[in-house]
Amino acid sequence: MTEVTVAASVLELAFATVPATVAAALWRYRSRPAALPVFIMTLTAAVYSASAGIATLLGVPILTEFLYYLRWPLGATIAAGAFYTGVEYTDRTEFQHPLVVIGLIGFVIIDAAVILSNPIHQAVFSELVLSPDGRVVTAQTGPLVIVHLLFSIGLAVAGVELLVVRYLRDRLYRWQTGALIIGISLGIVFFVLESAVVIHPAFNLATVGLAAGSLALLWAIIRVEFLQTVPIARETLMGSMDDIVIALDAENRVIDMNRAATELVDGTYDIGNHVEKTFDNFPEFATRLAESTAPCQRTDSDRDVTHGGGRDSSETDLSLTRDGETRYYDLNVSAIEYATGYRAGPAEDSTVGRLFVVRDVTPSRRREEELDLIKQVFARVLRHNLRNDLNIIRGEADQLDCDGEDCESVEAIIERADHMIDLSEKARHLERIIERPDSSLQFRLRSVVETAIEDATVEYPEASVRVDVGDLPRVRAHGALPVAIENIVENACEHHPTHAPVIEVDARRDGDYVELTVTDDGPGIPEQEIDVLTADSETKLEHGSGIGLWLVRWIVDHSNGTVNIESTDSGTRVTIRLLVGGKPSV
Image (cartoon, rainbow, N blue to C red; front, side, top):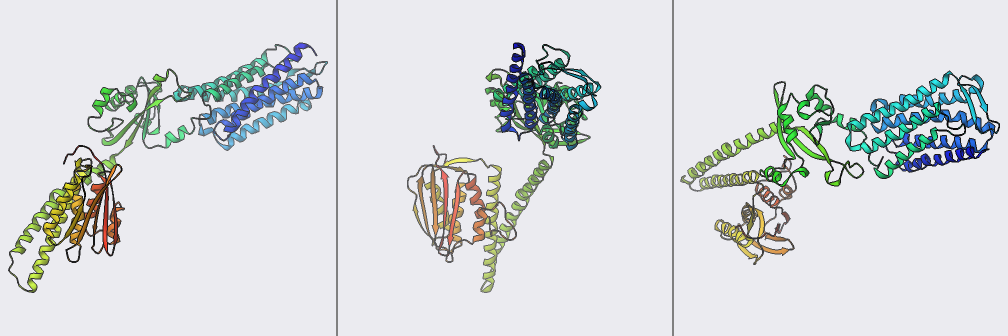
């Protein structure tokens, strides 16, 4: 055995360690899409290179001949792995079918069976000659070698083609996809060279390509998080979305769209075209996309303009008219950035484009319009007319002359009219809260409490009230806070059997909050009334007798506070927690 032969075998064995190392690194990611075919591909490459080195090093004729035959189906296995790597990494679902997998496995098995049985039929190699030392094989190829090469190289090239398409369409994963393209392509090139060029009979040139390609994959695993983040299920995800999804690069060129977006352009578009050219049938829509910026891309002046109306420009409204029908959409835009491992330039230039999600909100928009109309009818017609009619009824009842049982009936009419007028007034307060949910003022809690008690004792002069509020910090709350406190005190008076309750009002500071407690000695509030505070709506089985608790809850909720009610047969305790404010508004 010459020194060159020894060097060749040692070099092949050294080359085998590279794909073996990559296969070991890939094992932890074996459950990830594309990881298993890459693992099989690199592990087989390690066995291929090792078989070449072992045959040359040991020089056992029967082993050398067997390993020579074995390397051919090993090459077919690498090719099948390369193809399915491209299929899984690009999520080409049309090829992810059991029949395709069975076909690939069948190709490798048939290839191995035909080649390993060559001594019988000699259709693959017509003549096989061993060197005198039994370390090197020289073969005369038969017709089936061409078939083997065409199938193997064709599969590997097809896998590379899938990856190239992904590389051109998806800028976010170009480093990972590029590493796969380089790794597989190096293997293809050196397999072709091995078939056409002989550097030394003892040296297999394909082992160089397998080692170099594996190094590219190892770099991708270490440096650009290959398989930690895989562009999987893109077609499935994007294709199943009803929302319109469009991706533009920094120059407003279309780099991707989903199925719903392609329907706007009759199903066809070219990657790289400017958005205004792609959507030339919707010029206003295209201009809107081109001029929209993601929040992180805005300058200070942009923020001053876009936030002037109080709404972030990352989510805006637009309308599109198609086939004579106008539909309304919410447009949401976000920046597309390179994360670690994907950056194409300096850190400060990591934004590569924008992603637009356009959601059809026509049904909800029409529902909002219908609800607004109902609200206007309720607020401007029913409540206004109801209040006027009740005032007339009450006034007429006051004018009636009565005695005995008749007076009881008149008093009942007046009482129910007053009750309905009070409900109408509370409904008006609710309407104002809905129209101005963000109204916020600073209050001196003591003065608010004193006013509420003063109003209540005018109507219920027999009520006994003790107040211990003290000099507490001001609180920040919704502008209707006095209405909420007035309702709590009024509720204690109104539902007391003798209308002469004993009411205690206390307040204390608790960190960033002021806690106000109103306690009475009444009969308590029914459980179904208290449930109103935790329910989002009233039902036929559980409903409050009035809207006072709704009013209290809404006001406190819009004050970023909390309200809690504890009720027993001996009384009720209502606790409100409000944030400490600053300089007073009231």
